[in-house]
Image (cartoon, rainbow, N blue to C red; front, side, top):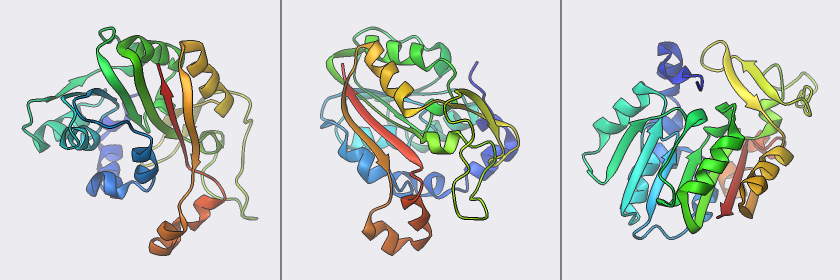
Length: 238
């Protein structure tokens, strides 16, 4: 089963104070770039893998989606999402994304934000996403960039370089972020892309996200992200 770190009280408390938790999509610096990769939402059937507090689910409905399914392994996350909106066209359900089964041909868009780097069996997840999409359907996701999942220790080194560790050795890496022993699955960019291709997807866009000049002007503390992109953004078609 996917590690359910978000139901760890210390982790959830810390996560709830992050800007993206408090401000929603507007608090996620990569959101404008990710939003530009999305199809027009009017009348789409959408599933959000790792929906968290439900920010994207609610945005999708406001943008015209016909119905939205939000899936998450965390009861804490789902409870917060359900309490935020009474919209009956949004359904929140608990699911282990490493063992996900979805109805075939039932969605126009499969979306996921910063969840896939926790999954051990990404190959099966991509295959299930492909099966669940209608022909021509979209997969859009973000994941923690492999530069971040590769290090065995967090932070910058003393000479201001990023301490990559065994980049080509894929598998679980333990890190201390908001709580001790958070497990993330390190895989290379090549592996992400090859798994998509093996599942039958056609890649339409890949971005190693970094802040724009305007974002750095508004948030100077984001400037180091120009040296080490924190997020990998990908869109593909069935």
